[in-house]
Structure formats: structure tokens, C-alpha cells
Image (cartoon, rainbow, N blue to C red; front, side, top):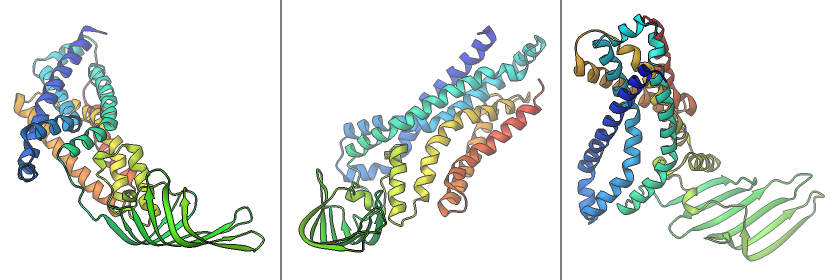
Length: 355
């Protein structure tokens, strides 16, 4: 690695680390000011609140990755511009594109770190919620819904209560075919057991054979091993996306869709778990050419440019997310529109920089 590459990388990582250490406490103070009354009402001690924020720190750090990367890039490139280091590098035969290559490599590495945090954050957020004794908002029951299991059984449920894990007036159907028997079950209720799954009570099961014959039996208790979803997973309101991994969100969205619900909001959050970490790399590509302005301004210029970029990105993220939740665009497009816009702008500005 060239000395110039080490210099650029050292300055960027130093600034990135400085901003990454300074910014999360601001999120902590903002969140604490917003929820302080709730913590007092719950009777939480100072130690419990402090411990909860320690577990929330990975989330705050991930939020800061794109901002810290942008500030590090802007201050590094703008500082080199003001001190004529970029001009000296060009005089030595080094193009601007080659000069900022270490920043892009660092952005790629930081994107990998941010993606790794995406899988860690749900677990730490769950622990934080338990310490804060956070209660999930929304109903703990659901009535008159249909659910289709992965094995093809359609469940019609009159009422489900997640608190005691019970269903009432359950009808289960599976159409018959030349290869498989049809099935029709009526039960007065069902209860969820942690080991056996859902247990049907007081009902009738009718089996329809491919040769048009049928068999009916009455039962007091019947185990339905094909339905593995827990009661809370069949509710209309899913857990918070910040407390679920990518795979858990994917599974929960499939459950909601099979129960006839709208999972667009959850699907958008699922895609954002990938798109937002990638923003770290894209924001470096976008900020580097903009910081080559030789106009005076120093820190004010860097902070102003960074704030404007963050505000525009957040606005695009909110607008595209709302479009995805409303079904106007696909969840994948909704999560990636801001990145695509900034990537296109970054490539455009990078192409216009004098090399």
C-alpha cells in the first residue's frame, strides 16, 4: 500500500471513529428525554436504564455508520483539497479516482461490519426490552380469520387469544386429489402446548379418499403437528422489526400473508436491513466528489454538506418506504430507491471530477 493510500485511509478512519463514538450518546439522550416519564412510571432504577442503553448501543452505532462515513469522507477530501494535497497528487500522476480508492475499500469493509450488526441487533434489542419491561402494543387476540399452513391445510378460526394460547370454533380443510386424501375437521376449540403444538378438542374428522369413499370419526383430543406457529405469531400485529432478524422477518411476513393480512410494512423493513448498511458505501461514493470544492468554509462546509445529504436521504427513505407500505412499489424497490438515487448521483459527480 502506498504512503498516500495509508494517509487517506488513516485520516478517514480516525474521523469515522471519532464521529462514531460521539454520535450514539446523542441518540441515547434523545431517547431518554422522550421515554423518561415511562421509565419512572415503571419504577426502573438508574442501573436498569443504563444497562438497557448499553444493549441498545449496537443499534445506535448502526444508525451512525452512514453519517459517520459521510462526515469522515467530506472532512478527509475537503481537508486535502484546502491544503492542495489533491493538486500535488495529480501533479504526481495520481488521479482523483485512484486517490479515493482507499475510501471505497474502507466503505466496503464497513458495510460488512454494518451487515453483521444487523444480525446482532435483534438479540440485544430483545434483552433491552426485557430490562425496560417494555410491553408490546396491540391486541392479544384475533377473531374470524383464515390461515393456510405450509402443508396446505386451511384453518378457519372464530377467535384466538394469545395470552392463554386458545382457539374457539376451528374448521380445518384440505382439498383431496388423486394422490392425497381430502380432510375436513371441525373442533370446538384448540389449545397450544409447548411440546405437542396445537391440540384440538371435541370435534369430528372426516377423511375423503381418492375413490370417493369417506370415513368419519369423533375425537376428544387430536394433535395437529403440521401447525408449528405459536399463538402470538398468528396475531395481526407482529413483533417490532428491530427485534427480529432477516430470517425471522421473512417467516413472520409469510405467516401474515397466509392469514390474509398485509405484510408490506414488514417486507419493507426486511429489505431495509440490507439496504441501509449498504448506504455506508454509497454515501462515500456520493460525498467524495462533492467535497472537492475549493471554496472556503472548513468545518462549516463539511457539516452543512453532510446535514443536507442526511436530510435528503432520510426524506427519500421515508417517501419510498411509505410507497412500499401502500403497495405503490415493491418492498424491494422501496428499500433501495434512496440508495439507487444517491449511487447514480455519486457516479455522475465522480465522472465530472477533474482527474
